[in-house]
Length: 387
Image 1 (cartoon, rainbow, N blue to C red):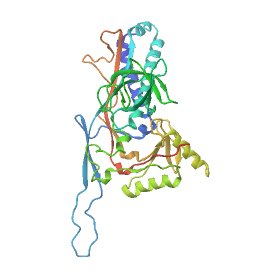
Image 2: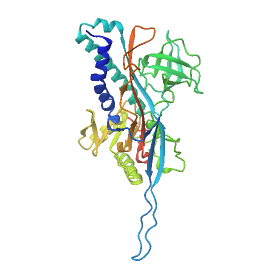
Image 3: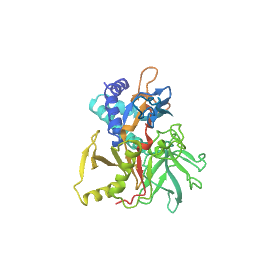
């Protein structure tokens, strides 16, 4: 007979390992290339000593002269709080009781819930990789109230999807509304409809994932930003500044190679992974196909990618339009307190009844933060004309 105890056991013994593997390897091709580690986690923070520059205790001298003076390596300490990443599934008591005497139906029920969790996580964790850690999804630029349902015009729908629960804040980062659901996304016209009563004068209001403002992992937008990073100021620390070329226009092979050469010449890093928007990948394909056969490479996690001189090129829906990131994934690590685990109560149970409702929920959790040890070893091209 199927009971909540049976479901608990299945989630612990069977589903945890499979789902954890999918979330680590199959969610996103970039995430699949980044190592996961429990090192340098101290309490609630990641504290990583990062070496930069070269050891100064080297030199030439005469046959009998003094040896070079000793000089230690130069270090900086990166400090970042672990971010709390959650994934929640919900199963009704009715559904469990309906499958009490049908194991196949129960398995299908759990499989469907876990598949939904993986797909939702794939969307959100993939989005975070390209974010700045604030959880910002889009900015409202205008209101279209010509129909029965008001639509909010946004600067981009890239990070938005139907069913997302969002908070909306005004330009000062306060006020607005919370716990609204996105009902419709009109991607062609860059506008959305959300649940609840209309928002008064929402122009320049910012949309965030529910309860996530300022709490997401440090993504590429922050690494390629201009402010302090991991508690270290960029001002006076040129090794903290990645290579950036804006307003590229028509993409050429020379432009790509210049960025790769700059990274290697300046920092000794070697680009081993390129991620870009869909339109940029099409531009690269046209560029390479014009005079040679395009090659494909297999990546960890079951992904395949276009190749540029042996470097895989992956298109990602969350990469900003007209943008290409040229990365050395060996310089990145996802520091975590532990791998994905079920949140358990004092009684050791995973499934818990939601107060006042005939449903049970289970929560996956990971405490982690993304670090880039060598920001100057990365490059970004933006303003590329898409194909």
